[in-house]
Length: 558
Image 1 (tube, rainbow, N blue to C red):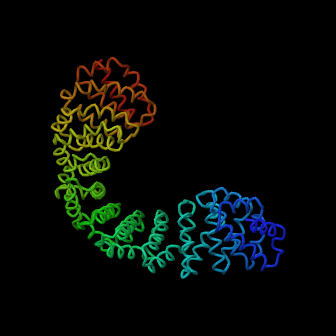
Image 2 (cartoon, helix red, strand yellow):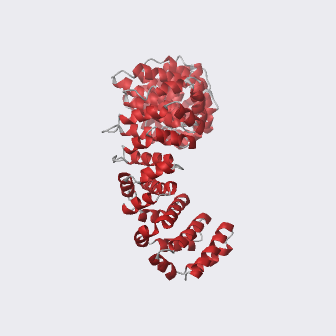
Image 3 (spheres, one colour):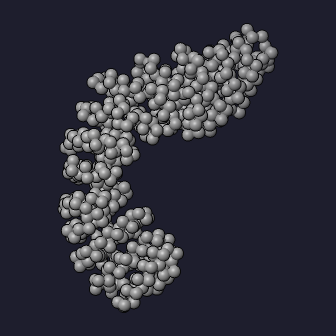
């Protein structure tokens, strides 16, 4: 420790004026002390005030520059010494050193900057603003044979890529080409894993997704899947998961997805299809998620349904009905839901038995599966009267929907259950369906849905309640009364924030429920005439016209 104190004193007194051989010796002494007791030696270095001297030494590059950067890297391993390194003005000269040719200087400089900025988004953002990303990408390309330097670049990329502000800079470089090139050379699992850790955050950016696809990353990933799918080694299983997950991530970008779909003829799309019948759960999951991502526009959906994808997904789901894999169930249902969006696909999917397959998962207690199941059925019955009637008369389904309408811990499931309940009535316009829903206790949920914060849900509820009042008012009368429908309608009409379509459908519903004596009495007991007459001057003509008609009806029947 005495040697350290002596070296520090000499360095502080003389700085860059000292002969380089002696300077070199003193720096060696510091490195040795740091190697023996990093924390204590780092504290001594801080107290000595030598960090400011290092800043000036770095500005005038010498044969000792690599050792100075090495010392800073060691000192900055200590969390409490990182800010003093910043305060000493070390970051700007270190950033400048990234432009030098000496590989040892580059390595130690990268380590020093990485340690100083470790876990600090503020300092990492400062580095991004100083333009380190293009410099590091260039270094990776030039020094790809230097393993330590390459690894330093990868660690830096991994840290910087977590910041959203970095993505635009990365996208303006050839980082995708360099990473894919490097990836192709790797044989060791650890090295591939290191590159994967950089690729995953970068691939969250759509522009970089497309660049990675164009650079040939997908072919590399498919090769990994092929090589590891039959292995039971932990490393291979992990690599298979990482590769297939990254494949799915690349498909989240519209351009990258469309490029890989290639009109349904692409080799990548064909390979993904072969994952669905696999016995490997990870591949089944990735395959189903990939299909869900390909099914993000009508053209792709129509092509896939016409070419038999539905049966493949049904077969996959069939293998997971009894104690199945929840993530696979969720992914396959997601794919079916997306495929059911185009109008021309609905009837084809219904006749292929999708509704029957989906109903097998009604007993699931997993909210993510319940959510996708509900969404799939809702998409399937849109404008499909026969299917809506068939499902709406299914007591088990309706009872489960009523149960899920109360799933307050799972807002998504609760919302989708309400929407499906409403959809069954709206698309079937069937008295039998209404009776089934009344008997199962579903009316109160539709009334509650009319007060939702989402206008689309409010409207769906009001239209369904309007059909109930028009087709089966006497059957639903008691439930509508106990659910306080009339009070809800009064609130909706009185509320200035209610959308025009909500006001319109509320007035239509008021006119419809007047055919029920108890509901009519409730309408009379509340000041509906006052509220409705104000709406005659509403800026929306349809609302104003309905207000006039409603006022007449209220006046005649008062």
